[in-house]
Length: 165
Image (tube, rainbow, N blue to C red):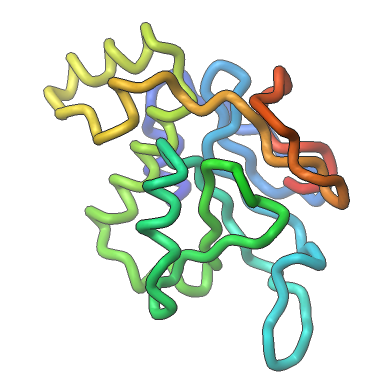
């Protein structure tokens, strides 16, 4: 996952308060590793998951498609209601093929890159735009701050809220 995210153009890697990686394009995060949070817990033990990765997705419809199957490794929490992103535990990343993981990272990057960077990457790779990623404007809002209600519309802030990386 790290190799795939780092290989995308114009990527910088920052680090959250716990030293966890935050992958950004144009100062907008597209993949980041969350610190253990109270909204992502083991349903049996109640312990916070220590290995949650957040990926931006092109749209709410893409999110719904990824999380609707209870057997899917993707999930979401109420903290991310109305936000175009999915969560994946690193311990379940092996359930994805390399191609699926690559597409997930590419779609995350495409959903956050500027229109110019998106168009240049698509032209250079000859990749067809994923439905909702290049034809539609990229997702602009940030996940709601931990412990606060979701915002009604897109936020001018970029990347993960502090404390949720």
